[in-house]
Image (cartoon, rainbow, N blue to C red; front, side):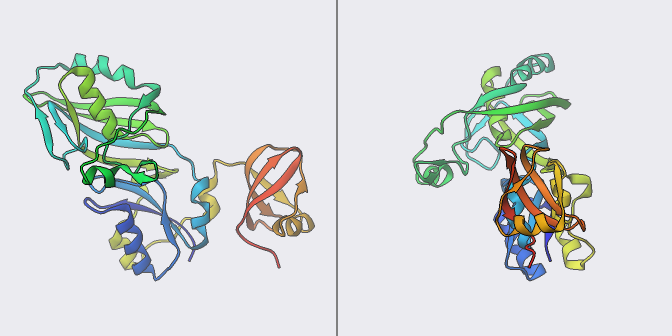
Length: 286
């Protein structure tokens, strides 16, 4: 079995837990995932099966989320799973929030949460934080394509639901934290669901019950790579390419899917300097 699964990750499961469960249910050794989700988050977790694990790096990076942000609260982890370190009744309005959110559009500088999988000097931040060594990761550039308020609930500790479309590497917990900083109220992430990742959508996702029942078909490996241009090679050139040879090709540049003339998906190539260079041969030709 090979291809991709669009898994709806349950609450309180790590992404690694989901891989282990999938491996056990499907009796497969080679299983991987794209785009780690925190245990408290739910939603789309792309799972790769068999040789498709070699294609994870080529999946599109854009993601979308539905998040609930609570104002007036700060925690150690920037979500409700952490220890509350500050709390205050706040009197902010929806208009205040709408104005503040404008600062989260486009390319922004973001500092990842202290409890995250980011590595600093070879050590993951969450491992350091658990030992009491809180180290601030360097700021990095992330991109927010759209952030839209879905609902607003006023009160002593107001909450807002937002839909966020963003690029790879964006921490929604950091957005909640930084919104609280801008509003001078404190803020933390109260709930998070990923609605889209790597071209997979929540509405089409599978549960572990679906996997247990066997009522699913993996997405074909190349079907998840439709954002990449495709190249079809005649039989002779296809065989040479699969053997690691560079093939003269002038019609395209960059990363591309490669197909045999009989429509078989062969792998991934890098097209540059009028040559088609094998990057990952998925289906060798004997």
